[in-house]
Length: 303
Image 1 (tube, rainbow, N blue to C red):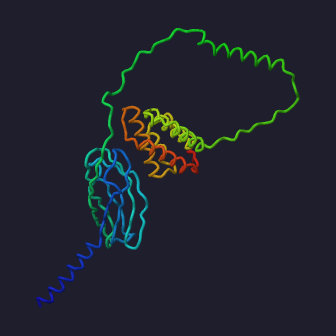
Image 2: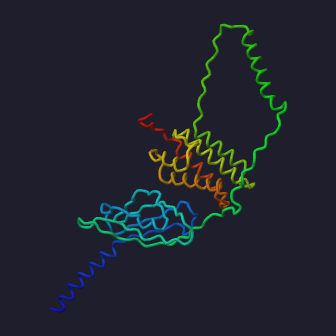
């Protein structure tokens, strides 16, 4: 009798243990080191749970660690294995512990929860110029001379010459051909300006602020012309909010956020980033223009 009870108990415990170990939730990173505010990709892998049972991943535990999720790819299912990628940024420095993520799934009509492993990542910051912002200097006015009035004099002379030509020219009864200018697409103009900026080699000669200013101006101009938003007069946050209803995907939005925020730090806080970041930003900007060149602007109902 005792032997029969032991066998039944062993079968039950074995079934429970096999069911427990069959359900696994793992997370992994491509690299355990990143720059503050940069974008990283995390790989999620769920095993032993049917695709139609996978429900929700909760990110509440990330808020206390200054970790912000930016976007995610759709689930990819292979048998009982499900895979997806999460894009995130960290806004703190040092060694950060990424807490386990809870995954909710359906289990025989009820909602159950399984937790992933935790990860450690090193987040390093950028060097800030200790001298701070330069003080404002008094505007000095130079005395006027003839050279200051020369453009106005030439303008008046040219206007008088044009008026005289218009009044005394022989009149002809001939229709002038209509010249139709074909507008150049914004993506072609933006890519040409990015190429010209790259050839100037500004950051290679130490003019980092001028390089970042011109780079972000080209991107803002492209966003204003392509998506019909006031990007040249808006903050980075306002630009990203205006693009939420567009076809820009989360990865492209994260690249744009990274480029504009880093440029703001360099221009206004005199930050000194790593040398490799300048060419990386140029490549990201060109990729963003190429990837969005086929997008069409969808006007709002108010328009």
